[in-house]
Image (cartoon, rainbow, N blue to C red; front, side, top):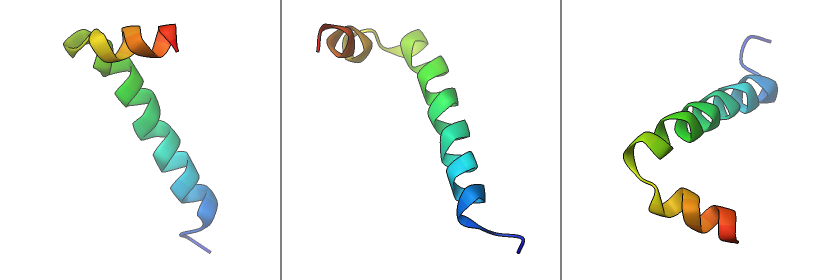
Length: 37
């Protein structure tokens, strides 16, 4: 089993972390709205 559901989950988590790390450097409105929510 080379391509399992855990591989997809790990990949999505990696993309999510990179997105959260690089998003504040470009936009502050979305992160600010998320903090108020």
